[in-house]
Structure formats: C-alpha cells, structure tokens
Image (cartoon, one colour):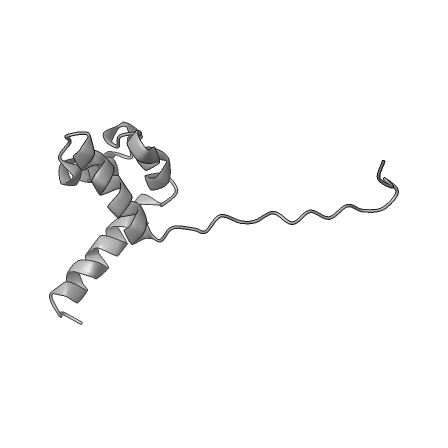
Amino acid sequence: MQDMSHTQYFKIKKEPELRIGEILEVVYQAMTEKGYNPVNQIVGYIMSGDPTYITSHRNARNLIMTIERDELVEEVLKYYIKKHSWE
C-alpha cells in the first residue's frame, strides 16, 4: 500500500492537438466517404452552427466542434488569399 500522507503527482500525456487544416481534411474525407457534398455541409455548419450538418463518421463532428466557427472561416480565407498571392 502506498503512503497516502504525501501529495501524489501524475503525468498525463497530452494528445497532440490537430491543426485546423488537419481537422478540415478529416471532416472533408469523412463527408466524402459517406456520400455527402463536403463543401455544402461544412458551409451549412459554419452558417448555422448546427453540428448535424457534419457526419459523426470518423469522429468528424466532434473534431470540427473543437474549433470556433469564426476560426474556420478565418483559416479558409487566409488559405484563399495566400493561394491567390494577394499578400
């Protein structure tokens, strides 16, 4: 039996956080695998905030809900601007 009179310390490994782009990729693939139009569904989610636009397949719904919707829009806009060399 351990001595319970001292403070116990636990090290918990933190799971690596996925970047927004990685989450969007997983969500896109999950939507495609289930036969949905990923662009329409993701836009529906961003506009409404209703998570049922996103499939639960491959944990996509839970993943996308870890990101604020405005952050999703910001990430997509930044990518679009960079791709078109507007910066």
